Image (cartoon, one colour):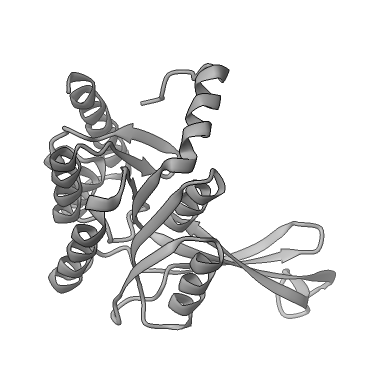
Amino acid sequence: MLLPALAPERAREIISRAGGANVLVVGDAMVDKFIVGRVTRISPEAPVPVVAFDHDMYRIGGAANVASNVVALGGQATLVAVTGRDDGASTLAQACREAGIAPSLVGDGSRPTTTKMRVVTDRNQQVARIDYESDSEVSSEIEERIIAEIAKHVSRCSAIVVSDYMKGCVTRRVMQTLVTAGADCGRPCSSIRRSRISTITGARPSSHPTITRRRLRLTGASGARMRRATRRASFANARAAAMC
């Protein structure tokens, strides 16, 4: 469901107030790695370009990018996310600190830190992308640690943002905790699923699009059916929020 158009005056007012915001961002954080080089020939082994390495660089993505945007607008951001116990986790934590984000990361040795590695040319053409990730839901132990981190920070925040890329961090219990905590503390709670934004405060956690989609995936539902069910759940959440 698309948000209504925002008048320029209202947009400027919101941005001017962002400096006093303390936002708790919960969700799937990731590292975007770029390997940059020059292409001058095609490989004799296969019809693919040979990239001569020049340099690499890292950026924070997913929920970490949401937190970075909050800081860029002058606010404060705390990030609760799941990482692996690997170099990617160290890279993510360090990059968050450099961006002015307070990282509250939960390490899980059973999964890698979500990393999108892109091979690009010096002309900004993407040659390939390799994803290091797990989209399975976190274990109950990790889930408890995520909820504990939320409880630690929620009372000090002025808003909650859930950034769900379906990588396993935002489970049903985590979503229930966030919705309940937001209602109890009077904090607005919004969900960002890739490019879709919806207000979820007051919505029933069982109808959250992520939960609906995961349930159907477990039953072997087709991709088209999952997309239809996800759209219906998104609409139900938006309607519930409008009634609050």
